[in-house]
Image (cartoon, rainbow, N blue to C red; front, side, top):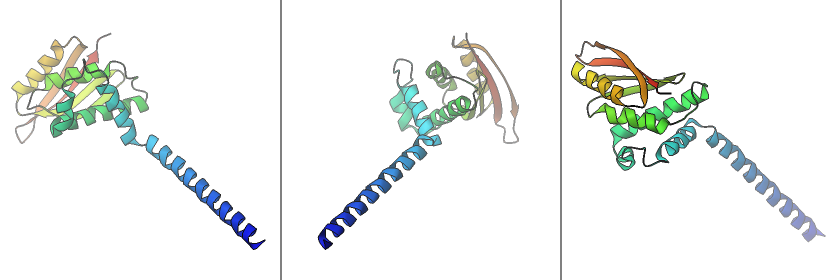
Length: 168
């Protein structure tokens, strides 16, 4: 009788432990699925999914400057989606157009989606690089309109904000 009670007690303990592990796994997976990191990684996967539209993704992930730009863009997409500012459509093309237009010296500080429009906040070493960035953005058929403004900082750096309106 003692052996039966002990076996039942051990079985119940094992079942409770298994239930606790299962519940812990469910709670952990829920936390991961609701995290900003997971949301950004899904968006990055979406960006990388079409290799014909993505500019050099191997270099994108190995170069820290490029990776930073990609993460900022993915963050803007996630925020835009969560705040109902945009439903991501052709955003790989949008990223590609911006990335190809940047050049080697323009620094992007932030991307912001305002409705369908993409706002790019950043810096350039001088006015010529800023104007070249805007010119390249305007030359992309992906944007219907590109407008921006800038100012010279006390450190002789151009700070800018550019709004890109996607083509219909």
